[in-house]
Length: 307
Ligand code: PSU
Ligand code: MN
Image 1: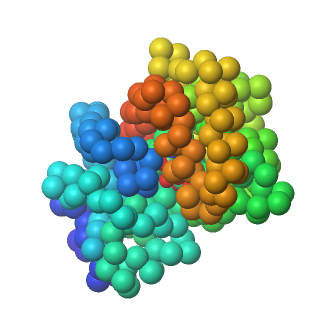
Image 2 (image 1 turned 60 degrees about the vertical axis):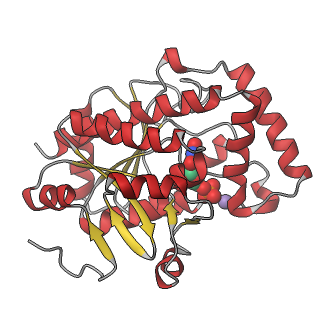
């Protein structure tokens, strides 16, 4: 079977294509985390071990990216290394996806762009580390990630480790609610805060099993709600960074960002890089652990959903 109306510039990995044809579970993975979220070679190691973990669970991973103007749904090991090494990759969202393709560029896809591409071929479940959200000071900068509006209109379920404290988390939750996006805590009463498993914000909805989450997705489909779901999965306790410590680093990075006039697309990569440096790599170790944890949960949900 071929996918109807597939643009000529899309390449689907053979395992992903088989899985789409057979109706077996697939988990999409984003690539801005590879091109802008982590340094080389940790990014390459993270990406290939996350794929291996999903394969080992009996689910097909589909890392999504744009390489030389072609949309890739599932990468070969060579493509993955190529992407991880690229120095000047773009970071694309809904607004600039067509630009990367028409100009033959290489780009990491954000959560928003990955959702659009996943949905285009019918992939419904997607794992990442953290989503973009409402940035601190958004009342003056208007910096609100396009991830939030994409979740409001594209019906892909995204597993993330909650929202990180580099964001204005209460405002992020408000925008998600406005956009009609359910925020489901997996086995948690509080919204996980990325590097820490808890925050002082209540989780809007709680579910304790992957079959509940899969049933929820099915009911939303029957209702034709056509928007995404955010599943917030707490980082395992052993991989946490205590909130007092991480919040100090965040504060420092935030002040530097304001002094250096960093804005727009550069904000998230700048903050992640500075927190990595300030924590002497500890933030990266936690980040990798939580991505793996999210990948496994997404694979379990996918298995239940396609049962
Ligand atoms: N959060 C992370 N690591 C990341 C990102 C977010 O912990 O790499 C990336 C994701 O790809 C997300 C994007 O979609 O940053 C959001 O960027 P912005 O805030 O510019 O919308
Ligand atoms: Mn932004």
